[in-house]
Amino acid sequence: MPNTAQTFLADTTLRAATSIATALLNLPEDKRNWSPGGNARTALDMVAECAINNEVTAALIEARKWADHDHAVYLANKAELVASGWESVKALLDKNTERLVAVIRVVPDDALDIPIETPYGSGPLSGIMTYPYWNMSYHEGQINYIGSLLEM
Image (cartoon, rainbow, N blue to C red):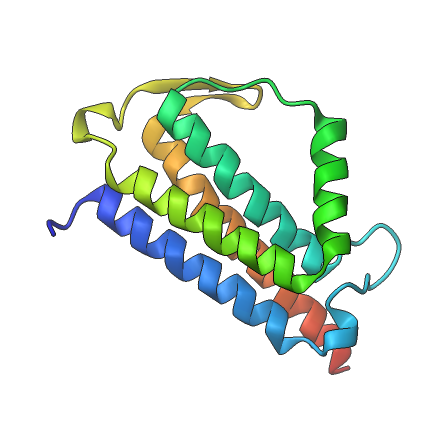
């Protein structure tokens, strides 16, 4: 397989999904859905976000158009996923990451610069394709930070 931006992003996205799951599993089981305080999110909540957003991003890459989302429904769906436990979150993360990676791999080179409008601004399709990797890596760091708090 040629070494393309799509191949790189697909491979790093897959590794990021594995890494965030590993970070969560490195936490003691009773701390995976624990908040370190205040409004801080739990590790399980962050992984659930990534699981859901990987599907949202796959659909955005395919449609090349932002789909309107009801944020309250999104938050309710995420809360329901978290309440269903790690096995459900992991299954959705795996399923949606597999779909996302497949979608990224088939984006044609001439589509990488297509501008995509989102509520957060406009940018090239290639930028949208990097989001899942960035988001999962960012949350992996937050989960590792939660772990470091437990060692204090």
